[in-house]
Length: 264
Image (cartoon, rainbow, N blue to C red; front, side, top):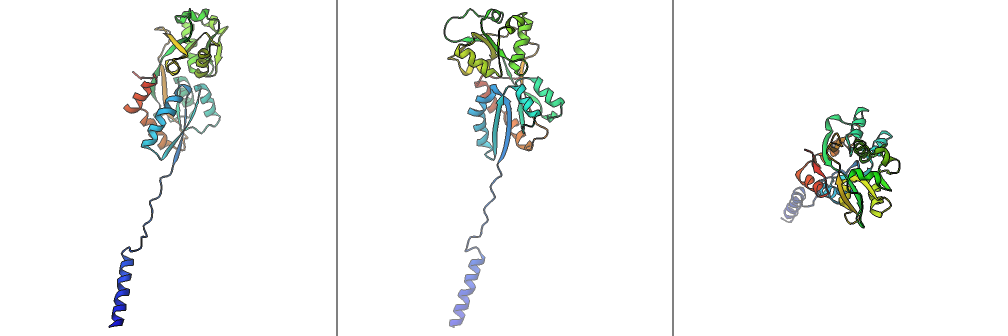
């Protein structure tokens, strides 16, 4: 009888162990974190770093966004010289088209994302005699982006050439390496007027004042920001996920809060 009880208890112990009395569950593997390298125009830095990247990460914690922000022409050169970018947002079509023509872009992924405005700004403090674009010719220290690499500078040159004052402005203008530099020069008073994007001017309303938008007809095309995925991106799927998010209503409303407009 005693032997029977010992045998029964041993059998029950084996059954319990076999049924999971001791937990042998294997934890689900953590999702691999992927990093998307975003190369974007300098005017987009604040909206991405302050709002859009945190918003995207709440939905996709498995995708990390690393932003590189500069003049679009400089970003184009960096990509051509080996920058491992996955997603590119330019402040003009010129740089995007150049990279696409050279085979760097996934052509099917390129699309217009945002629209901006070219505006004339002066320091917020004090009175200014500069009221419209034509007045930039009489500014003592005007500032614009360098047309060689800065889209805002290219648009500025186009508008001022249309108005017949490009040579007068060029001869005394300080050329910024990006719109942020031009914005800061005017904000601190070292330049008495400048041409930047409306979105940039909105960032430091306490330091600069917008006095005019580019007159109708002075720009052949609107200021469009295109977006596209790099053809050799190691994170194509994640980059396309980010690109898709940026076209959602939630993202567009955020862009608008920072002064950007939807493409018409």
